[in-house]
Image (tube, rainbow, N blue to C red; front, side, top):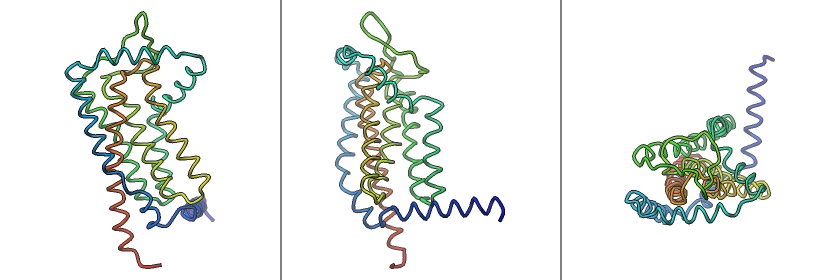
Length: 246
C-alpha cells in the first residue's frame, strides 16, 4: 500500500469517527434557532456606540472606565489577560483559524469548513471599519498603562474582540449543535465562550483599546455571528430536504 493510500484511509477513518460523534442534521438544526432578535439588538447597539465615538461623546467615560479596570492590577491578572489576548496576535492569529478550517474540511465537514471561513472574515470587517474610523489608540501616561505589543491602525473597533466573536463564537456554535458526547460538548463550548468573554477585558486592561471599542466589537461580532448561523441553518436545512430518507 502506498503512503498516499495509507493517508487517505487514515483520513477517512478519522472523518467517519468524527461523524459518528456528531448529531443528526435535524437534531443539530433544532439546537441552533432562536437568536435573530439578539442580532438585531447587537446591530442597533453597535450603531449607537459608533455614533457616540464618531462625535467624541464617549471619551470621558472611556477614560474613567479604563482607569477603573486597570487599578485592579496583579501579577496573576496580568498573566490571565496576556493569555486571553495571545491567540489574537500574529503569527498565531493567522495560523489557528486556518488550522480549524482545514481540520473541518479534512474530516469531511465541508459546509462547516466553508462557514467557519466566513466566520473568520470578521477580521476583514474590522479592517474596513478601522480604515473609516481612524480613532487613536490609548497613550500611556501618569495613570494609564499600555502593554507593549505589535499594534497598528485605528483603535475602533477591536480586531481581537470582533475576530474572536466571529471565529471562536461560530466554532462554539458548531460544537454545541453537532457534538454528541455531552461532557466534551460542554467543556469545549465553555472554553471557547470563556476565551471570548475574557478577550474584551484583556484589551482594556492591557491599554490597547478603549471600552467603547470593545463593547462595539462584541455587539457587531454577535450580529455577524447570528446572521451567519441563520444562513448556515438554511443551507443545512436545504441539504436535509434533498437527502434521501434513512
